[in-house]
Length: 324
Image (cartoon, rainbow, N blue to C red; front, side, top):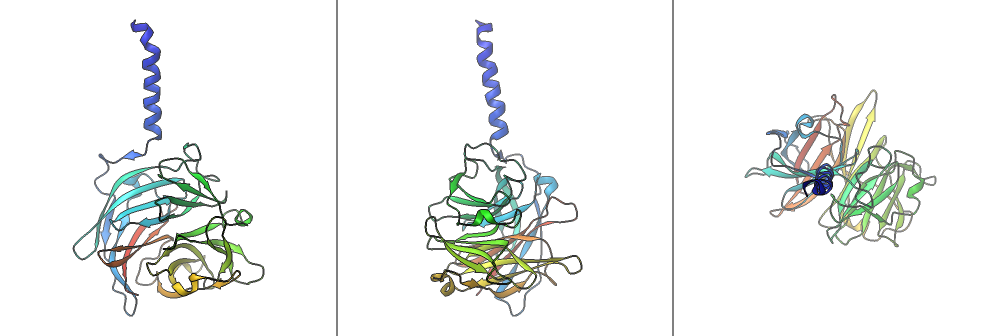
């Protein structure tokens, strides 16, 4: 009888091991310090009020390369990485909204249509994250250009009807900016898919599956869009990055007024109004994710940098109150 039970026990053990490997990481025994807070300088004559920042410790967390960001009103911070991972954190603020710590709720690998973990590289280069009004997550991928829909970031990713023509984007220059507007439409901006009839502008779309409208985005000279976040009034913030071997790396945040996003004609080329530069007094880094939320009646803006899992770069989370 004992021998007859061995195959069942073995199968159970295998199932248990497989479930352990594929289940998102539980966080009861996480390292004591995932992030260290530091102050940001005040910003004069700016609609952004500095609240503070956190430096994330990749050595304790186990991964970095954050490229897409979402911040919920309850201060749940959700991020995706360009190495096919996701992570959910609790963001702790003090009484005056200064960031104090991050607590990891769970982390895991993004899945394919069957829920199998996506590999790093061509299939798993996640670059942008947003959440629809119905609670579904949308993740934009580069290289294999597509958008996936997730009921749960730990589950399977269903195909989502991407804008027509996205598949023609250059290999590593596809969708970097993706945000759901309050009315449910999606704003999607490519990093560097040039428009032949609009010098200096790149392909973008607004709409939803079956009703995409091709528009364009013209960043500042030498800049490229790396993310976008909807504002409560129907407008949006767009994060742009600049890099050169001689000039280093900088970024800026621009605003698109709600009126320009309400009903843009096909072919409209959008440009943002610069609100802030992430250079000079603010720490320069490879900022790739931006998120906006309402918390206690105040509009918070979070920006995160992609360290490329490189020892010379940092994962920084900056937090501002937007008083625009």
